[in-house]
Image (cartoon, rainbow, N blue to C red; front, side, top):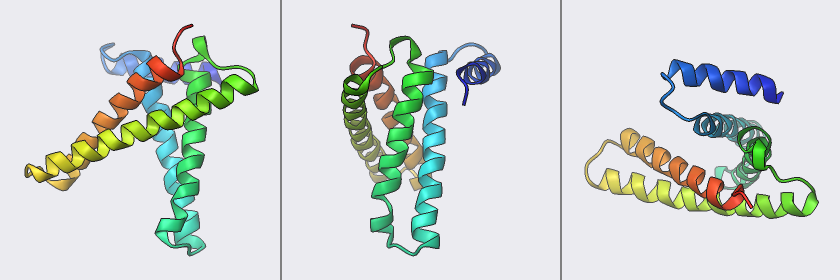
Length: 148
């Protein structure tokens, strides 16, 4: 996707939200939504069509969508401080994957805690996703794409 088109979509979304949500946050969330779609599609192909067990079908889509999200965020969300060259790209990807793992732990802990307190599972899941996404964004901005 071309950066100019992405920037326009993010601006339209920001305007629709009354300008209260930062563009960088909207872009990060949009990239994450694309990653979720990629993850779901690849899981469907490997599990639903090819017939791999769910446990065996999950690692490749997760890794692929994390890599896709890293590349898109590097170009579209954090373009002003994007990584260039092989070594910075590889180090940035490793840091990004670590951030994603931290966000996953926050997601899990929040959703399990909310469910344990009596929150319906779907609401607990959404609360976990929201908290995990916030953690992923904060860590990505401060650790993966920090200004030097």
